[in-house]
Image 1: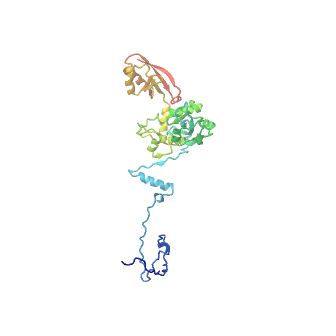
Image 2: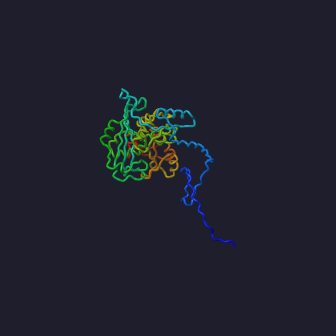
Image 3: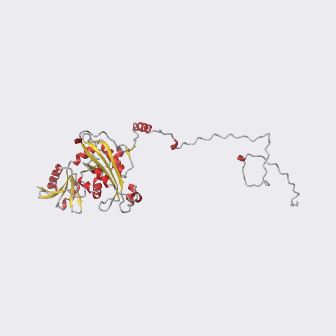
Length: 373
């Protein structure tokens, strides 16, 4: 059997280390005693591999050149608008100057556009946290604003933590209102001489404002939400932000001042069905007396007919009631009640007259009675 013992070991002299470009050297963690780099023959240099040029990286959207001036941006928007597949929305920019006020003062009325942000929906326990006012003159001949818009926007500490729902809707938190108070002198200054107060959903804003500033109770009010039949005008929604979108504007909603600017802009537009501006329509509505008619003592079996007719049940007074736009509508409704509800039986129903001084307030109008024959 051959011997398995190792023979004499002859140590090969250490080869001279080849000079390698560090950028091509691969480090495996061995020491020089165990790793010998080969000497590359001079006559056979390593072939140089061609490195393909890198593909150009995708250009980020933010790096795409865009027009640097508002004029060029507007040119782009105008171009898109000419194509049937695109609609362009513009950020609503508040307008503070209108055409000069007419010389004839008799043709000018003073408007106060108003909006509130509150801690909740109930004026008897919730509080205003923001109030915005725009005072502007209205040219009754054109139904459009004129002159300079005066602006007030103020915050107020409600003396209670702002509920989460109000904070989320308005963006107003406790730190913003801490120690803040509405400027009563400025509010009184803007209210002085006003002919008509306009709010979008005046039935909400008016009770809050009158509770905080009693002088508002002596002013005529109009509601751009209820006094204009937006559905009849072809609008899908009476919500202010939706009305603005229909006209090509977007804005930061649920802050009082911006809501006022948006409302003033929307009400300048021509109503698509009836014509004329929304402001002119509100002025007309403010001159009319509306009525709240109660079907006093209506028989129980008439409830379905009343409900189908649009009457609503007042759980407090235990009576069916409806609202009517004018005296002609009141007369026609009395005839319907006599024929379809009381069926020839003599009846006396309560009628509440609501003019612009009490409409949308929490207090009642002028109470009367109507005899049905």
